[in-house]
Image (tube, rainbow, N blue to C red):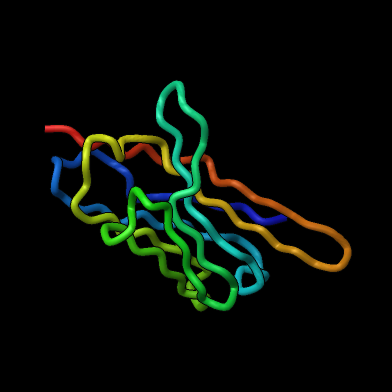
Length: 119
């Protein structure tokens, strides 16, 4: 079983920056495709950014050019660097990990961290 623990959320002014971290337990982190999702009140949970086990990245159009996802397999950690933050980025941000093998697919979620962008 993999546990994901997010950190780094908080309150920031518009135009500011935050870096979220998500650290995984266990020894299979390097085999996981990782992602960040976010969910604003009353809305569905949406993908923000993904990074495969091989390091390929993908971003939601709304964050392209402002957010950067990266991973450090030696530290079992995935990051989300968020720059030029806007009020509409306010949400609970969740870390997600997926492992796909011939025997099936396992998916893991963190508990979420609140990001509030407000003046």
